[in-house]
Length: 302
Length: 302
Image (tube, each protein chain N blue to C red):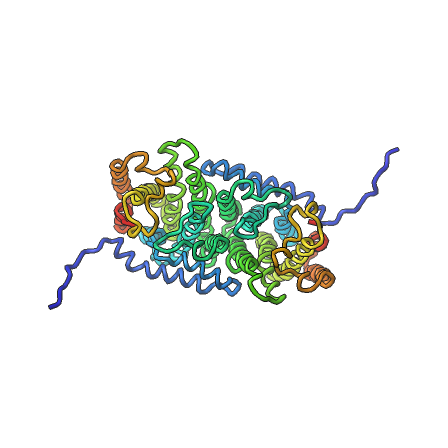
């Protein structure tokens, strides 16, 4: 007898992710595989190791979904989707280094410097960051749009964005801080790149100013929600779920939302932010996938 | 009695450098000083420390001189001049790290990680690299030219350019190599960024294809000359002249031109490359500064 499992209706995000995640992975692999011969084989291997690790691809999916919501063919935003994932991968490699967060497990695998050595890992990160800007300017056909995407991505990833957030996060245990300081860290460390992912998709779709503003509000809400969920996962889940060491934030005396607010209030804040994210999309005729990914971010197990 | 020193006629490069080096330094300082408030103060300090160290500013001067030789007002290329110096400064910070070349002295000062710690130095480098692309897209008024400059700079600095060269250089002592391999390393590690400096200046001046080709030949010659001179300096000069530890290449078993060719043949090769650089400028009506800088590179003491 054949037992059929009942049909489970998938949400719009899962549908979209099932369709485009393999395309994103293929596009990322192609970028690495077609690097000119001046790229050393071992460097290529180190870049590929982190870039093509078993990631959720949330940021590149946001880029494609934003382009879609603003009326463009999602694939037209693939260069920007790849660029944001490359910047994300670089940031993980550098954040995991012994001189920074000193992690040896990431996405269930040894971190880049554990596999390839510290010097190689630093250079693999540098290479991915730099290559992201090559991809934007080589693969987006409109120089105006390419320049705008570079501006958005560099601003989000640089000293007053992601790098600044990581810097403050690294030094957060140095003194007493407020929840406003924690939000400021996370807005830069996590939120800025999520916003850039969405805005690049919107720019490629030649979105209106109103659409851009809505996506900024949406980005702010899911960016903070993402970090709160991360903190909660670190506190309550297991290494087998998250693919990285858990309970580490507390061990290192890091600022976290549950640390400030307690678990229950943190969960309530997460729910509010998810609701706010959904509301900020009212302008869009078809943005169910963006609404669903906001829920996914709040509920994810890893 | 007043003794007058005889008037020494300055060369065109020195004239140009005397005029524009202070403007480059001021433009670099302004970029750091006007960073938005999201940039942590200590990160800003670490970026400023390396970016505004007592450098020769050869790369940004090349950018301004190329723009000038191609008929543009040199200052119009200032954003690209700043961007290339920021990429250069980032590369020095990362190259000096303990996991890479492990240097504690640079431009006569303690290296960035000695001053600020390893984690901060890695982030200061990341921030300068990223900010270079912000500067190009924020400050060049034509998006077409900005996108072209990003393409040139990212390609030169990335995995098949500077980072690839540094990667191979770091591993050069792992096996037996040829002078062709050494040239390939130096073309990427040093030459690529020098070429980018020149080409960005040319692009901003809307140079002809012939002018671009000439500048590529010129860049190739001075890029190699620069590295040969560096190797010779490491061998024969003193720390007080170069501002960094000398004799280190030999101690670390690094590939060098004098190591392959001997000092005399290396010097002859340097002279040939300088001559070749000068000849490649025949197309330009007014490029005396570029000719003079080729001589300066071959003769510099630090």
